[in-house]
Image (cartoon, rainbow, N blue to C red; front, side):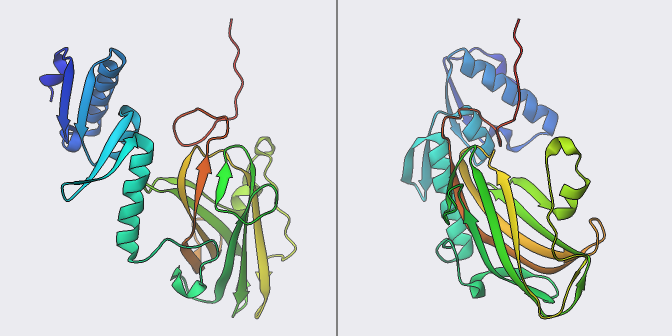
Length: 261
């Protein structure tokens, strides 16, 4: 590949070329491939590197056992591939909006149990589709079998390719500066009583770019860095984000201002 990238080809055929080499080599190769793409070089890439396929390719073909499963825009084909491997790994259909809690993957001591999880759009309706820029609410209900001191309530959101997009809890909001406009309304105090039924609401402006995402929610006890899981459920809701008017690329839309002179 090092020799091939030094050329100025009209057509570049690449077969898992970046599967070897260190990060510096991979970065150098990707930059060169982007340069060739900008010059109009046609490229045919065979790869399992989904980030590279998304970033370099305008169109893609998903092959499975020698047969075409999907052909079209690269982002759509990648999502189709991820959906297939997810369903194969789970051995069942993707979760519905409010999947029965008996199907959830759980972790923790069991002193508290998450019993319901919902996502709502800015109209207050339960949904699994949101536009970039709209207000979203995540709500989950729990029941405590034991008294729990210093509870931490958190959420994790992963992109469908496994990239962690956000991992946060109410303690993160308490220690964030005022410039981040994060607030905590705590009617519970520092202890969850035994046999308590509670509800947690997390509201945020959805700055995620278009794609598919997976939500996990959790309850820990103790402070960040020294906490242990009490009740945690994984991949309880899979949701999709649509573009609206956003055409950025990457993971999220950055709130910003431009000054041009």
